[in-house]
Length: 228
Ligand SMILES: Nc1ncnc2c1ncn2[C@@H]1O[C@H](COP(=O)(O)OP(=O)(O)OP(=O)(O)O)[C@@H](O)[C@H]1O
Ligand SMILES: [Mg+2]
Image 1 (tube, helix red, strand yellow):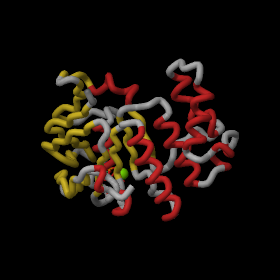
Image 2 (tube, protein in one colour):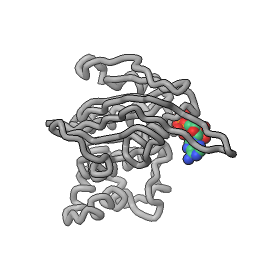
Image 3 (cartoon, rainbow, N blue to C red):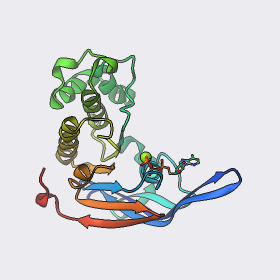
């Protein structure tokens, strides 16, 4: 049985100079393991904030974000070890080599095969010749491939990616998008991507738009119909 994350009637508001700013209200979304989602929308609409709530990294102002398995609900915080995150700015640790960046999540979990598994993943993303390079010695596309390997190395059930190709040239962006989507499919992980790129969004099974505080489904297709 697959896992699911349910966002139930959530709202997110911030206090700014004494005024409450509401990003969205009564928002509902289910994220199923093994499926891909794109969230598009104008700058400032609250896409990154939504990703932080859906991944359990932050709590909504009202409503609930819960994990569901076998029909049983449990706190999303218990899913923390099953969530990988990929950022627009890569967020690799600058003093660590590519190999050690990818091995880190496994080492933190006490995996004694961390380095061997990290090496396999770097080979999988086409970076076997860059194991000992630090992030500053890698191109943007290479850094994002390291970030993908780091997010997937511990076999998470959910991957959240905030503008994963936003800092890449069109060719690298297309390569990284293809890699990210195929890696998630191979591992049967859910992929939730926030993007301004129509090309990237169109590769997801479910495309949503967040605008004016409302999340609307724009398109929903089966994976086999996609041109991956
Ligand atoms: N912790 C916070 N406190 C106050 N306001 C915040 C906070 N986090 C986000 N905001 C505000 O919420 C709004 C939405 O931010 P968010 O980063 O989610 O937008 P976005 O849709 O991801 O935009 P972009 O496409 O530019 O990345 C912004 O106006 C931002 O200033
Ligand atoms: Mg954002």
